[in-house]
Amino acid sequence: MDTLMKDEVFKAFTTYAAIVVLKMLLMGPMTAYHRITKGAFANEEDVARHSADQKKKQLRTDPAVERVRRCHQNDLESVVPFVLMGLLYTLTGPELSSALLHFRVFTGSRIFHTISYVCTLPQPCRGLSWIVGMVATLSMSYRVLSTVLLP
Amino acid sequence: MDTLMKDEVFKAFTTYAAIVVLKMLLMGPMTAYHRITKGAFANEEDVARHSADQKKKQLRTDPAVERVRRCHQNDLESVVPFVLMGLLYTLTGPELSSALLHFRVFTGSRIFHTISYVCTLPQPCRGLSWIVGMVATLSMSYRVLSTVLLP
Amino acid sequence: MDTLMKDEVFKAFTTYAAIVVLKMLLMGPMTAYHRITKGAFANEEDVARHSADQKKKQLRTDPAVERVRRCHQNDLESVVPFVLMGLLYTLTGPELSSALLHFRVFTGSRIFHTISYVCTLPQPCRGLSWIVGMVATLSMSYRVLSTVLLP
Image 1: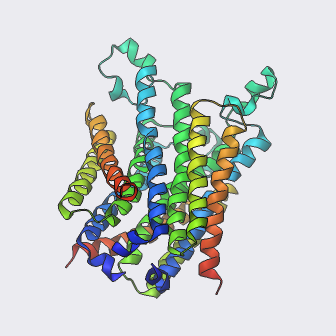
Image 2 (image 1 turned 45 degrees about the horizontal axis):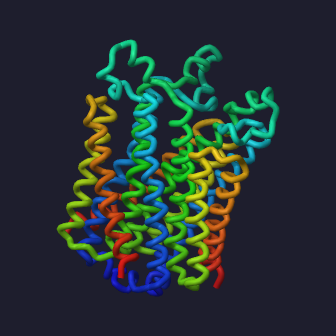
């Protein structure tokens, strides 16, 4: 176990994986914040203390809440594959410089993606940052599959 | 490989990670059960054997189905980061007692979260259990990042 | 680290995990393709270059887009638990033949599931392939939990 954490590539993976997972995790409180400030809830028990009239008004979808939720969903679809594939990639023993490039490009692209999504930056900000993150993960997948499949 | 499974912290991680992943996995059959008993499907091919009139009725959303699906989605957003971060946390070599505390608090909070969600317990049952699970994961993230970033 | 990649079971896990994660990842571009060809977007900034009249028309949900998204969501709910549980399962040191059986059955079932979903094959194609994948993951969970919990 110590051996893994002494490996430079594994340490780099741990750092960047922790950063992007943490970023993804913080979308949850951000959704909660928008739900509460905008008064847009999904469950009846969340509005139980309000009057019957208020209840109906608060059980609704709000554009700001839905935007954060779509961003969170995109994180699940991009960050989780990155961490899973990145772990396998790290175990194939890549060069430190090459690994750092992949991890940094992905992490940067996802932070920019979140800013683009939440702040509604004009396209192609969000589209490009999504593609860059995708390419980083695909490049790691190629390395993983060529390591295990090619002799 | 044997070395990992002989480590007490890793064994504890394996136990609790398997329990929460299994719990998350069982939300799938629960959704299927509610879809079938309530007759609320999302795909045309699922209602193909019914008459045209029945078809339209069955292609609908049902509050009970949507509730289970929201609970499942919350699991994806909470359990997956816990397992990914928990693996990195385990590899930083924490104290067994501290690790067990994190894993048990998280597992307990998620089981209580599912009960609160599916049985519609009054708030703040669901909200509190969600926050407790979130805090456990954030505390592990702090340990992971401080281990790799601080000398 | 080298030790892990020299292990035959771990190599098999890496191969099949990479294949299913890659398959899941490619649902993203497939959603983008359908959104663009069908003209069905979720965000205002995606349709900014169109006239006000066109904008409203393009901010809509499309059955083909929603179908691919449901398939993607099902992947998140099935493939991610498989990879997480599969990693723990691999570390319990199973027989290579037994591990290969689990990994191949799961991978095959998920590829068939995607084809069934995207091409709208009649039921029970999709249902059965979903159940087969679920059973493979449950069987691995049983092995993981019995290894760590039984002396």
